Length: 170
Image (tube, rainbow, N blue to C red; front, side, top):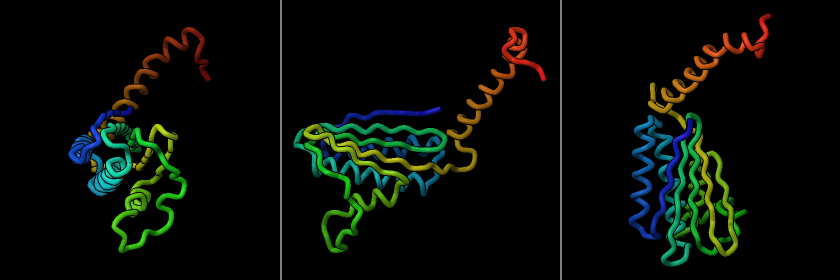
């Protein structure tokens, strides 16, 4: 089971708290643990802020978020000019610097991050975070229910499959 949503946003500072609240509310409702949620929220904020700082004036950007019972995957896609991201955030930023620590924060807070520059058509920031849940979380219960439903359907289908010869006894 996967829950997925897409937000198409204007390149405006007001869009960052909106996307953060949408994701926070969704993940909180599904039972993602507070520590995990905070890490994702900060990483998403940094990725969206980079769009505001580096994408072309007036461009829109898109945030695609998907959650399943194991992982959260987020892509922040802008339509700016792109850049070489291979070495971003790998060296320590100067502690007194006004900028340059966002990518390091993202790398520290999520389990996997990939930057894909699309020359002259923007950047995709791909974030993956392994999820931790509160006890009895709705998302885990839904996932368990889905597995139980499939298992029951297979069990219910066995007599007919045996009769057709698709399942051999023994």
